[in-house]
Amino acid sequence: MTKYELLKVIRRPLITEKANEQKESLQKYLFEVSMDANKVSIGRAVEAAFGVKVTTVRTAIVRGDVKRVGRFAGRRPNWKKATVTLAAGHVIDFFEEV
Image 1 (tube, helix red, strand yellow):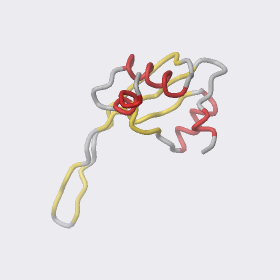
Image 2 (cartoon, one colour):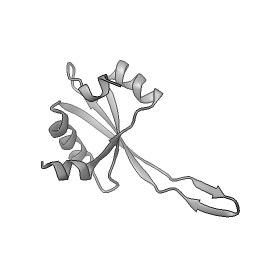
Image 3 (cartoon, one colour):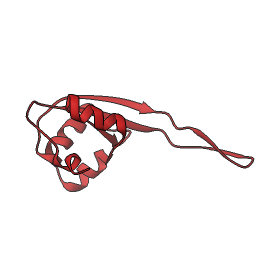
């Protein structure tokens, strides 16, 4: 995969308290991914980008909230979240520095 294809699939890592707990105890990492990405392409992109072995990928579509500014209401966009489980002994170094 080229760098451009990786950036099309993986948008950014999700760093939250829940994500940190899953990373430390279950070796699960959370990413925001493209809405049209499937589980196979997400797994291949993570393996190519970080040089690790992926065992499972789970995805969820997070619905956007309705936000108000004064009397005007708008919507935040929907986005897709991917939970990637790594094989035993594999670690993504990017998350260890956070």
